[in-house]
Image 1 (tube, helix red, strand yellow):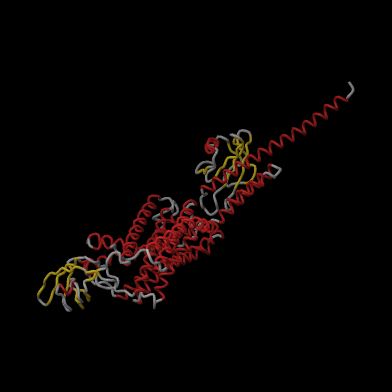
Image 2 (spheres, one colour; image 1 turned 180 degrees about the vertical axis):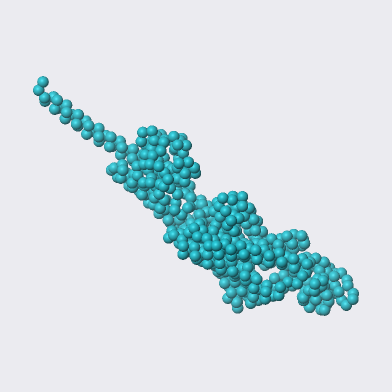
Length: 597
């Protein structure tokens, strides 16, 4: 994948983003539509007919006919049937059929030497699935919806990081299901187009996760083996060839591979890329420097658990049993992807495995918290209505009023308490770093020497920047000279008329410099009144994560306060020197007065 999408090819990255968003949005629509069908919002249909093997001329043997549209049309077992539309051959009455109430199915019936045309209208029918399996399907599709949403969100926040973009696209495709929204089944052209696109998204998930693993390893440790690169390209070629072959077989009726061959190819194209992705991430964890190992410690199990949805689906399909009551594999399909999704979200929000922006992180967490609390109160009200016996409309109105008042009085307090816990869980390190810098600024007023204060400020900035290099420059004649600390590639002194410093003096606000002599630095002015007496420079974070807006604002505040303290120490030093000079002058004057004329 890398080589097509390099760090410098912005246009290729944008194409990948557009394709990933298209795949994710399509799967989101398809999954929500399928969930509506499973929940009964869209009536399932039935024509009460079971078909056998279809011949090359598209005529299929009718194996059984039950009471319904098929029997009303005069069909019986042993007849040969050919649908008017090729797509209808896929809508056979199995547990997974895509037939809906009101659908009109046209077909040609052959009985002996006679043929005739019939039209059948699907009647409403419940799903012929075990209740536990139907509940499992609803849960699994609901998890798939969440997976796709997370993938779309990660893609939108990927910025210039190729690994994040590949992860978001891969996660969105992992949430894919092999269904086409019910309203597209009725149009042959739309069905063909979206079936092909659905196949692309289904097969792309494993390849994108493998590509993400390679890029994530390369970013963290600089390693990218040739074997992994050739394996990825080989899988892409095999997957593409298999999809084209399947489409040719579907369109022409040519005989396809036997079931065993199809199963092994499915395993090759689904399980092997995921296994290689996990192996690549494990190798990346081994080679990564210590600060990166913690990020890998969350990414590897999260990706593994999310991908188990597809891997276990293969195993369940081979076993032919999707009932969670007697197949633990299906239960794993329900639980493991959700656990992996929650772990990935926790790692993103708590440990910034992928930095999505401070404001976005907090908005997302607080939005979810508020939604969960509202849902909890709604569930309480529903439980009271259904399980607490209440007789009479007046009593029911009083209970509703009491619930409403209780929600009004407790919601904000409960939300504040929960958000306080969330604040401590997800943003504790940020809070600690902010508190440490604020405490240093408060204690800085008690440092009695300027050089000691500059050195202490550099150490505090480095800790706040998660190990970033820091330095302080003070005004020296017509420019600024280094007083303490050091940032790589920054000279010991520089002219006051550098463009970045001119802008800094004009705005007196911290800024991130992208080019010039001070590139890649966060610069904050140290100000006394309207005069910039110095600057504090903070280099990039070792993790490569950008400084958040609140961090930039806090560094600017700290630099202003320390600048005032340094100016005060300079004034005190000058006053002390003035006092010493005055004393010296007084002594000399007395000496001169006592000298004989």
